[in-house]
Length: 277
Image 1 (tube, one colour):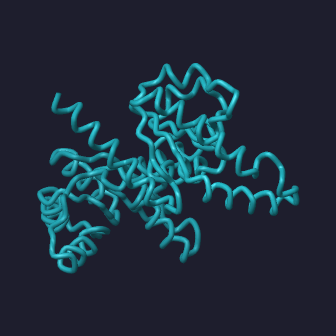
Image 2 (spheres, rainbow, N blue to C red):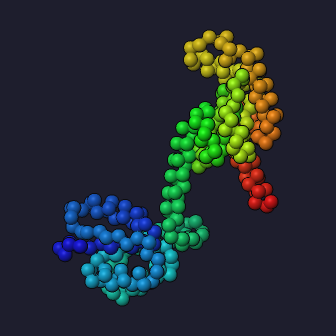
Image 3 (tube, helix red, strand yellow):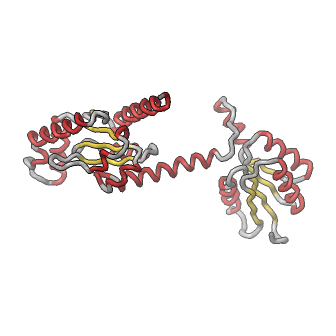
């Protein structure tokens, strides 16, 4: 470290990213180059803390930390006081205020922020998976899906897939088309992953007529003809009956959230039965 600059040490029991962002944001309000910042990540033992404080005292550094373990926070405060090291507890005051406001103690587990970040990235990955595997694309990827939706056109497969992906589930969907056999891969996955969607003929007739109008197509196009719709629904129903492992969810006049809640409840019940078996 350069001898002519002030020293700022960042000590963290996780990656140090949170503290570094706070410090960099604050440093942006000052003339550049006044201080050098050094990060000490994943510090989780008393000897490590003692060594860093000794070095901070030697360099007359300002020590900032985001340690959440109560014992280590107390040790830092005591040793910094003994060594005359300026110390700032970046997260302690906030945790104290939140604890008082929420009426609950903090868990004191290092790295919880990054577990949340992992959850965020899992959701992003799930959304990308849903987009790539929408409407029967890449059937080979069905093995990688957490959930597989099947249904005829306009039974909310895509919006439901997207909603579930935002909850962190890798969801693919496969269209059921009369006269076209579903891909073999659909029957090779764990069949408890597969959920079938159905809708009342009258509701589907309204939806498809509205869609034809949006597209500027004739109302008597087969896609929107009542008889054709009823034959498609009957074909799907026959397929569902042949695969009784697939729960059949009626999406008629249902909000996406309502259908998703029902689906996830069924999935949770199945997982519980597996754990108890």
